[in-house]
Image (tube, rainbow, N blue to C red):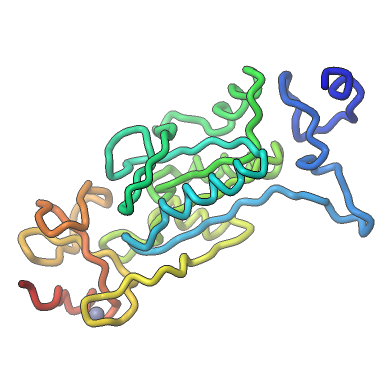
Length: 238
Ligand SMILES: [Zn+2]
């Protein structure tokens, strides 16, 4: 392994000590048609609350790990309020909490300096990251050859894009709406995340307020179709 590493062709994508030779993940590796065999990508998966984003994030982490790849899981404001990704169906995974000051590039470089491979990042709750974090994701893909899979909400309780989400829509190689349907109470497809305080839909306030989708929460969120989001009709209550 050491000898292989010593004789491996230099790859600009992995310029850090401790990083093993990575021809499979190297932008310099090309197939017969001259196209890169593997090119890292920035992919963004979005959907309303309760659509299974975190579940999909952990599933993707599992799938890549099974292929022998090594990754990091990051999150911000997970419903558990801890440094972990949790899901409504009971899965959990430790995660690195993203703060305004965290530089995702430095995070990866630090792991590489410690001799730890990082092939990909799973960025859950990416809607709550900063725009700068999204720029760092793009740089990780383009200059470090690290795949970045981001998951998050598209719009806030006012039905406006989160800044980081907007940047992800602008920069991602691939954007996909998660296809697990969440239904409005009327049966239409749920699209928008209404904030509900004292039983009423509110349309003003801070962009991020912690809440839950359970009925007993002081501030709760309810996924509605556009029609009922616009009318503020939360449906029959029992
Ligand atoms: Zn509806």
